[in-house]
Length: 214
Image 1: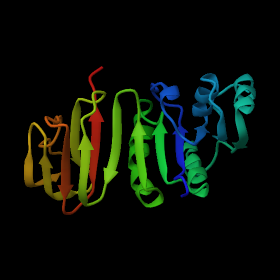
Image 2 (image 1 turned 90 degrees about the vertical axis):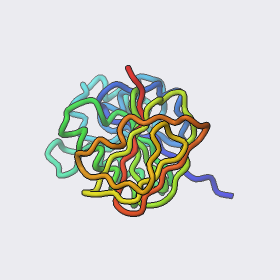
Image 3 (image 1 turned 30 degrees about the horizontal axis):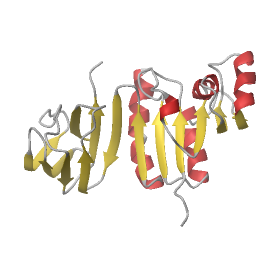
Image 4 (image 1 turned 60 degrees about the vertical axis):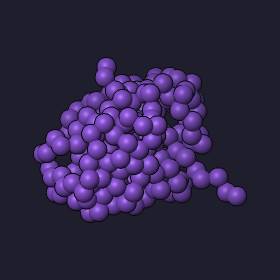
């Protein structure tokens, strides 16, 4: 049986979780994210970006910990994160976990979260992880979620203009066949009260955020 390739992709924004506690077959570093991996002593398959946020000495450090370094000009159509995603796609990854793409500039954070929409088509599973949040995007269906002591709160937001048929079981605030729209707070800051719960919906796209207090 072939093992599904899991890739950890690290960007250079915001506060990172302990990367040593995360386990992936391959690591990819995007710009300053490559420096974060190198500084943690983690070897990466590819380091990619324009590297305008690192010094020449830091780039030398990155080269020590990267099998391949792909340097692009600062004037380009794609962000460093998007270049890294392309590398993961070309490697044929099944799952990708993205770190260090939230908590920095708001314009970059918003587009990086929106990039999850592209990842829905490219990978079987995709998640953005920072030191406080775990973010996923879902198409209609039924999903199981287990109790996780790391993340107390679970929120469901409408990524599309409307989500219909949202049903939550095993939660403190259950829902049955509800509709949520942009800008509504109906399904924010919920909590699991059972060992596991389920969430399902009939149409639209849901962004699920598991989070903890600082």
